[in-house]
Amino acid sequence: MNKKDLRLNFKERRKNCSAQFLVNASLSIANNALKIPIWNFNYYHIFLSISKNKEPDTSFLLSILHGKDKNIVLPKVFDNKLKHFLLTDNTKLKNSNLNIPEPVDGIEISPDKIDVVFVPLLAFDLFGNRIGYGKGFYDDFLASCRPETIKVGLSFFEPVEEISDIYEKDIPLDYCITPDKNYSFAAE
Image: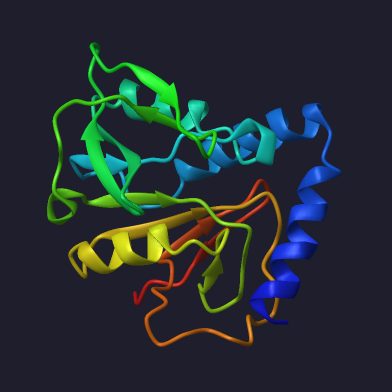
C-alpha cells in the first residue's frame, strides 16, 4: 500500500480508538520498551504526544527515562526543522501552532549527541520503513543523527506487509514497539 492510502487508513483507525485503549496500549508500549537493548546510553530523544491525534502517550516512557536517570531531549519545530532541547526541571512547555507540546527554550542538543530516538509514526512495515504525517521533520532530523543512533518507532498497530513508495532518503527504524510485540530491524 502507498503512503497516502496508509496515512488515511491509520488516521481513521486511530480516530476510532477509545480513551481506555489509548491508555492501556501506551502503557503496554512502555513496558515492552524495557525488553529491547537500548538502555545503556545517555541521550534519549522523545516526542511529546499530540493527544488530539491519539498518538501513543509517551509520558510512561518519560517516567522510565527519568527513573533510569537518562538525559531526555525534546524536539521543537523551528523554521520547518526540528531543534532539540534538554529536558530539565526548569523546562517550560507550550503547545505550538501545530498543537505539539514543545519546550519554550533551553539547552540545545546537537543531533550527533543523541543515542536513541523514539520516533512518532502512523504506520510501519515488516522492513522497518515508517510513515509519519508527511511533513518530513523526522526524516531530516534522522539524517542528521549519527548512523549508529538507534531509531525506535511507537505504534498502536501491527505492521503492514510493505509500504510501496519508499524514497531513497527514507531512514528505516531499528525497532518498533507495539502493545503486543517488539519488532527488530537492526542487523544483529
